[in-house]
Image 1 (spheres, rainbow, N blue to C red):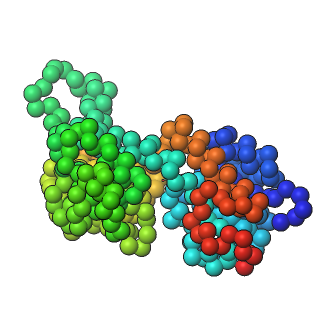
Image 2: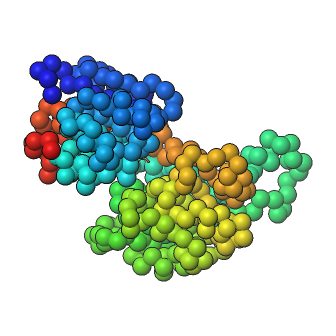
Image 3: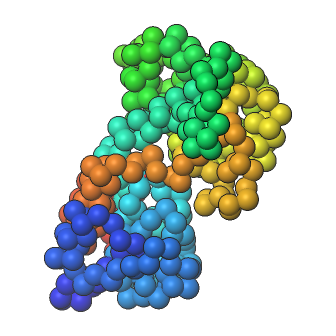
Amino acid sequence: MSAGKPTVAVTRIIPEAGLRLVRDATEMRLWEDELPPSPAQLADLLHGCDGAITLLTDRIDGAVLDREPQLRVVSNFAVGYDNVDVPAATARNVAVCNTPGVLTDATADAAWALLMAAARRIVEGVDYVRAGKWRTWGPTLLLGQDIAGATLGIVGFGRIGREVAKRARGFDMNVLAYDAYRDEAAERALGVTYRPLDDLLRESDFVTLHVALTPETTRLIGERELRLMKPTAVLVNAARGPVVDTDALVAALRDGVIFAAGLDVTDPEPLPADHPLVHLPNVTVVPHTASATVHARDAMAELAARNLLAVLNGQTPPACVNPEVLGRERR
Ligand code: GLV
């Protein structure tokens, strides 16, 4: 880093709450397009930068980091950081930061919105009204699934999964949870019962996914797992698209293996306009907007900026994924 202000890349326009912090303290290069930079454009943008605020649409790996030996921090504007090769960053003493906590409520709320919309066929109902098909009250029109008193299975019992569990209390639900790393105190505190994944899938009326994307969770839900679920069950994915095997999900929804899905995330992302998940009536899909509230996105922008600036100033950032590299010389 030169004696002057550090040079920093921000790979998309994020809320002003964070942008102004970065603009005031650095020489900021901002990627202003609606679409993300291509890998070549990202390489140009990062060239000579001391740090970057990145998005989940930017792939940051060892090759990218090797081209920029002065880059010291990758501050991801997201709680998930599967777009960053963290071991590669750690090996080079590059700090990787994320935005946990500030989007927990927004994401848990959105998972519930998807669960309810899919269970009660809300989007089908809206389409029906807009298409001018609403001619009378119908005793068997758009019948969905009960939520109150049902069994909710939460896969991934971290920050977001726990908030989803809290919201289930108001619906008098029986709540089951699976996580590869158990926290029995949290289970007790929230009145949640632990189940191995297969049992949770068999017993739940609603299965909602809140795991990080890792090699272990990639395609965690495939054909076998979908077949364990009830034919009346609803699957919600507000985690990452590749946690579910898309082809298996399409087949399960088409063939009535499960009742419906509520999807914040998909694989691929974005979905092409002709993709079956766009057209199946029992899919409620939104464009990865679970954390998209004004408050959550402002807070994410501010936290991403604070993480970035802390590392560049030799301080401890509020949320670092690999804190062991802090204070070490870049390799
Ligand atoms: C969004 O998906 C996030 O990880 O914050």
